[in-house]
Amino acid sequence: MLDGLWRRLRVDTVLRPLVGSSRREVDVERVLFALVANRALAPSSKLAAADWVCQDVHLPGLPHVTDDACYRAMDQLIEVEPALTRGVYDQIADLLNLEVDLLFFDTTSTYFELDEADEPLWRDQQGRVVAEDDPAAVKQAGFRTHGKSKDSRDDLPQVVAGMAVTRTGIPVRV
Image (tube, rainbow, N blue to C red; front, side, top):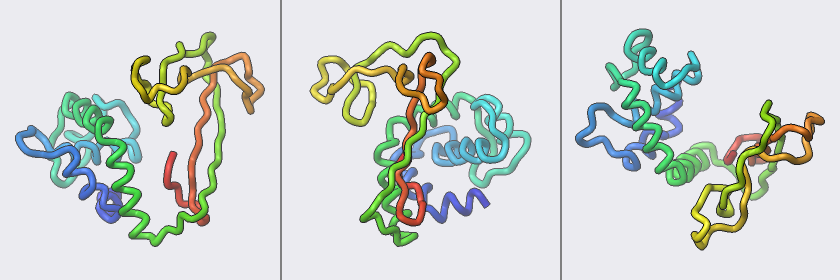
């Protein structure tokens, strides 16, 4: 079922050209699908996910995988994330005829059981870490920082998470 949904949303067709598959020991798209399936069905570490694929389940197109292949696939995913996000959004918007003329943005915060906040780093407008001398650098901030907490835990570092949804509640950006 998960593989069918993955293909119906065309994640595979968007992802394959971004990560390539020539001269690799395994198909990166299939490894990333395996990690998603593992997270949905039996959440675990990448090391345990590799064992799960090899010993507990059958995934079409992925007879075996190593933990190294999982880590390499995740590294590639980070590199292509902006293009993948946009490509999947375009596929879903077309498939579901999404109306995105009005988006709702909801935020929440949660705290961490740490005494100290993260060290502030230079970030671009999207919050990604950049070099101090990068022209895109606009502010310094840590990922976990002190601030107003909805849980009344202003004494602990926290993070704010947000999600943009369509009028019908379909998430389009986190």
